[in-house]
Image 1 (cartoon, rainbow, N blue to C red):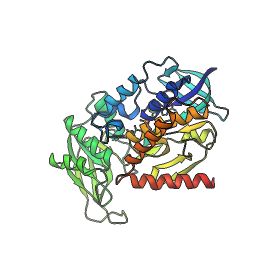
Image 2: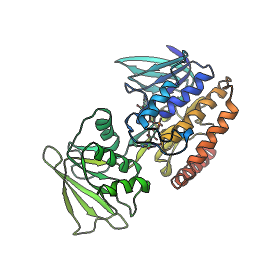
Image 3: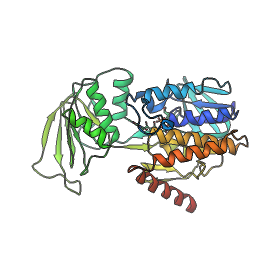
Image 4: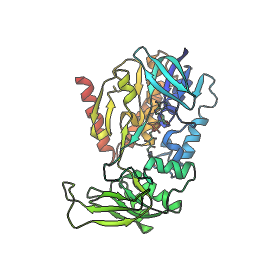
Length: 363
Ligand SMILES: Cc1cc2nc3c(=O)[nH]c(=O)nc-3n(C[C@H](O)[C@H](O)[C@H](O)COP(=O)(O)OP(=O)(O)OC[C@H]3O[C@@H](n4cnc5c(N)ncnc54)[C@H](O)[C@@H]3O)c2cc1C
C-alpha cells in the first residue's frame, strides 16, 4: 500500500493547479495520470487563450501545460505517476491503480477527482467508418503527433471546439469544406467563426449529417437541411466528397469514479451531463472527496484551473493544514471564476451550478 495525504486523479489543468496548492501547504501529494504526459487537453491546444493575465490569457494551451508543470518542479512532497490509471475507488479512500500491467493500492486522507470529460458522438449510418473522428482525437493526431489524417474535412458542430479545431486543420494544410451546425446559430465565439469565414470556410446552420458514405473508409458525407424539430426536410440532400469527418458535438463530464465511491451524482444538461454534487468547497457528498474541472461541469481550461486552485485550498483546510495564504487566495480565485462566468457563455454554466446546488440540498 502506498500512503499520501492527497491523491489527485488526473493531471490536466485542474489536477495540476490543485496539486500546487496542496504541495505549497506541505501535504504529501500524488498525481495519477493515465497518459504519458501531464497537461490533459492543454497538451493539444496550439491556439492562444482569452481572458486576463491571471487566467493565462495570450498563452497557448501547450505553453500553459508546461508552465503548470514548472510550478510543481520544486516540491519533493509530490509524486507523479504517469501511464497510470485509477481503476477502482472505495469509500475508505483506498484506490486501485493500474501501472504498467501491475495493480497497486494507494490510501489517501483526501482525494481530488479531476478526470475531465469525454467526447459526445452522433448516431448516423456508417458512423464507424475509418476517418470519422472526434475533435479531441483529431487534435491529438495533428497537433501532438503531426499525423495528417486526410486531405479535406467536414466538421459537424460549430461550438468553440469545432471552430478552433477547424482553424487548426486549415493551419495543418487540410481543406475544410464545410462546418455544419444543427441549430439556427453558430455556437462558438464570433471571433473564431469570423476567422474561418475570412479564409473561405462555409458555415451552414440548420443542417446535419444523415450518413457517411464509403466502403473501407470515408469517401463522402450526406448532409441534409432540418426543421426546427430537427427533422429532415425532404429534397435537401447534398453529397460532399471528403476523406475526413470530424464530429464535435460537445463533451460529457467523466463522473464515473465519483459514482464508484457512492458520491451522489445528477444529470444537469447545462453542465454537460451527469456530474457529482459538490458543495461550495468542491466537496462531494462523501467527506474528503473533492472534484473540480470539466468533471463537475463542462467549461474551459481557464475555469478548470481556477477550480483546481480552489479545490486544492479547500482540501488543505479539510485536512487541517491550511495554505498560509488560504484566505486571500480563495478570494482571488473565487473572483477570477466570477469574472470568467460573467460573459454570455457563463450564464448557462451559472444556471447549471444553481441546479447542482439545489440538487445537493435535496439529496
Ligand atoms: C479542442 C478543444 C479546444 C479547447 N480550447 C480551449 C480554449 O481555447 N480555452 C479554454 O479555456 N479551454 C479550452 N478547451 C477546454 C479545456 O481544454 C478543458 O476545459 C480543460 O482541459 C479541462 O481541464 P480538466 O483538468 O478538468 O480536464 P482535462 O484537461 O481533460 O484533464 C483530465 C486528465 O485526467 C486524466 N484521467 C482521466 N481519467 C483518469 C483515470 N481514471 N486515471 C488517471 N488519469 C485519468 C486524463 O488523461 C486527463 O489528462 C478546449 C477543449 C478542447 C477539447
